[in-house]
Length: 407
Image (cartoon, rainbow, N blue to C red; front, side, top):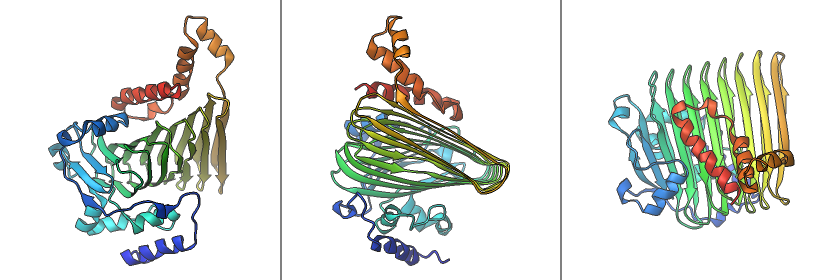
């Protein structure tokens, strides 16, 4: 099938012509134009720096590479000599498509452009996004950072990220997405290509605002004996968040997805994960933890699809309700289309046990302190799959989630 620029746009337009308006008025936002906004970290406002830190991004760090986009503009890209010498590329996706003809072979390959109205709008209104390439055999022991910031009210930020980890390479990518205003739309298309024997660790931390609509769209192709590990955290209230990363695991590949969700205010979050075991001997796990309070609603989805023999997959969804009006739903799905697939799941939603609470309070903790301890223990999952050098900072993020859950 042809993959020309015009052909992709025609496919995208057909999706919108179907009139799939849904719950979000896509025409009600300002898409502006993609541009450049060259700044140095020391020139950035203190408020923006603090907001970036809240979602795990240190814009003053020089240990690895950094990509910063503010609204529709690339504000800052830094690639250290350490990375340059090893052939690592970090730049805007638009720049990569202009510079390298071969990048087009990865553009809308893992994620079809006509997947839904959000992928279609991204193709028709692309506003940068980051491109990262790690050459074969290169093992990066320092995290690469990407920060997508929104600071102008009622704009749309449709970005397309492409990450290629070549054969035997190793990368840790920390992405922080945040808003400095109360209203907007973020559409983040991400395509990961983890080549044979490679490893990609992906940490994504969201810090949006009460009137934001957020639509991440992620697809990951993990080739034979490769590993993809994702750790996702949502910190703040959001009007509507919906995502379901799709991971395709080839022979003996590994995939691990962990989601930590804090539902507050009137937030509605529909967050899932999908592992497709397309190669013999592949393995994978999806773990979801949700803390739901106020009037928030959280839906936890998980889907395991066994398409090959000798595959193993496990799905675990657990929700903790902290207020009478909080709502949660777990929707696990298992599908095996061949013999020799072993797929399992666990799901549980409940409130804090009075017995646990009384036990801690009898030992001198206040009710609030006891609740925070229980919440913190409930969240402590998935860290063993992440690089040890990042586990301390991730634990700090989980401490923040526990504190925010109690106001």
